[in-house]
Length: 384
Image (cartoon, rainbow, N blue to C red):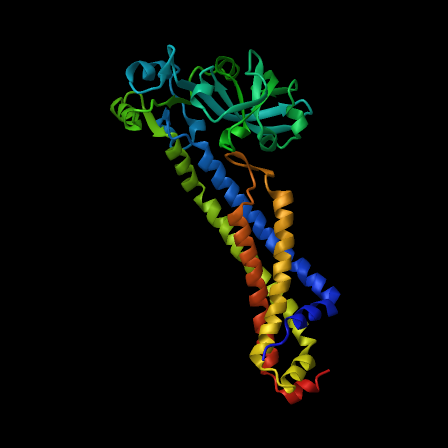
């Protein structure tokens, strides 16, 4: 015969202070799991949405996966458009975007300095970077920049510092913010874009970092990759943009493994904390457990009732943490080496966080309950 369901619920209410402390401890552990999993999901989403399958990046073969270290001649864009077929071409304009991309110190109007990602572009950039949308303001003119909506997070400054009309200083020049843009959650959102020739003059560089090419619907990226391999004198490397960001995911694999290790360690710490608290809770109920056995309840029924209490607490803690994480953490911008991205508390994060919480309730309740049930009933009835 099983104990009534209400019995476990009433037991939790009989000890409000201990129940509250256990609930806070479980909620804290589950919240940490939500933070780490949200970080991982946000990083994966940012890398996954950054690439365009129809865009091919051409950059220096010596830069490997770090385009910031790439340096190619300034005439590379015109050479590619003149030598290759299959590049999108409309109204006399080739969809090729020459770009200079580097990380540099950026000083805001409030004297906040941070490491920013600046990309020098031309008027053809919006044709190739099809995911970019201007949110407010206008395309940058002479002496102006347009900033991504996560650039403030990358710089570590307040969003008001990057409002339209504010000024920025980098590479020895002052720039006025002309507007803001979004890129569907991609890596571009943490960057600052300005006019390519002006940026080259400011940095005293006449080279490029890369050329982004938009392929026509009937074209294949292999044509560009083959051209780069055949022209060994140019030392170019062609790679589909989605493949480039896939290599970045592999590059950040150690970081992701470390984050999953943190999830495991936090969960393990939560299990031990739950064991400690449940041992204390069960230790004060030895006579109660012995009395239940004396009046005829089986040990399995008592064990199930104690596990029920742990699961109820864990479920409540998971619900509290999930609600707080979804309302307070979802979409929060965080800085990273690649730029900035938003924490993503999606269905996968909710599932993992709640699974960890329920597991803590079960694993934390079983060992102390088994220990109490092993004691002799006559001895336990005399316990103080």
